[in-house]
Length: 347
Image (cartoon, rainbow, N blue to C red; front, top):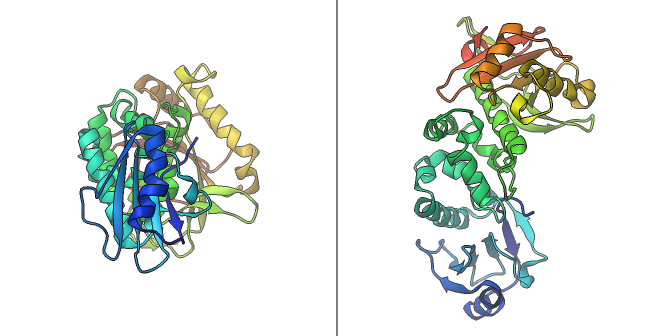
């Protein structure tokens, strides 16, 4: 299964004739293909071509005529001359090339999925998976048909919810990491996709509470945790009484609702999912905050959890459910070092 879209960087010398011979011809033989200049002007200092396959695949290629530098991006079979080239993320290519490619793909998205393209921040942020080779259909369906993991929710409300959060820009430096977590499965993989959105939900809670953070932290223990809230980071206290500093780690887990797992009650689902985390990362980092995101739960399931407020094996922990109207309810187990304050309504 192919991953999210990434550039391939070639250090060979390219010409128009070579592009047609070594890139267009094999793709045309395999799928049927046509070549053109694309919708937008070539990036400054480069020549650029767009190759459209009859099966809906697309490839974009830009090369400098005065040096050995070229960039390929496509959700199709990679031609053999590019097999041994280095890869880089969309934002790591020269700005002009990256901008050209992303304008082309966003225009495609507007033509293919106008409801999705209408949410410009969601569209840009998840572009690497919305156009991935294997996941382009499933990831779009996850947002448009499954409300990005929110049960019984209007997909347009869910899109607006995430678009408003991503508009803040706090996750822009981590787009490749966070968008890539959605995966590129050819079918809607609720386990992985819901978990990925759970990490966005956790990021929103931290942001709303006034914290700065870095996602996906590799630690000396050999484990990686979902977020680090760094030493000296300022956060506005909920009571307005100044600032606090924090040096904390956060791990996120998202229980599947009882209808999609072997646990037959919502309380059992919360306990089983949260307790599974103590066998690995949290044993090595006992002071980390565990966030248990129950946003996949229907009202009745969440109401049962809220009423019982079951403890989990790891402390400190915060168990919460977020809704796309912006509300979030939560209860705490233990004494979290991170004060979520008014980011949630405590129950």
